[in-house]
Length: 151
Picture 1 (spheres, rainbow, N blue to C red):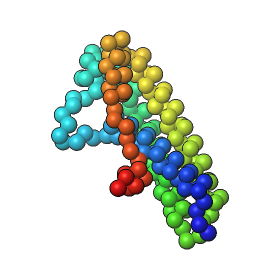
Picture 2: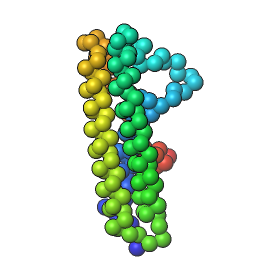
Picture 3: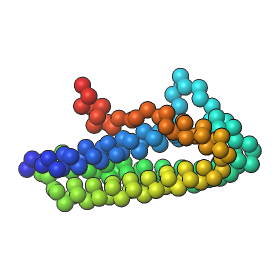
Picture 4: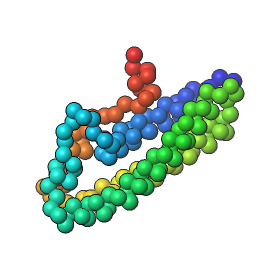
């Protein structure tokens, strides 16, 4: 059985969503490349000591939750790709993985939004503007699917 256009479209949609989320997360919390010498975000924003303590207290549980959700997403993404390329297409298995991915993505988006709101509450107006500018200056990330099909 050949994959339908809908199944391929769903895969592309999932891959793009994962790519966007992954790009934001990696850029925000991932290790910096050696050529990038950007100081830690708390320094860039100019947090004072009480702000930094609050920031780190809010960031620790967020990162733990986000990393756990990312691992679950990766497991479902792998299962979806394997289902799409199995010898026999199982639409129920594909849909089950798609639904799981969508639910986890929504939860992760809520988590990021809640974290940004918590961070916003810690910052003064000038620091909020700096963070806003940093977030808006992020280059759009491309999913693996986009990268593979770009050439």
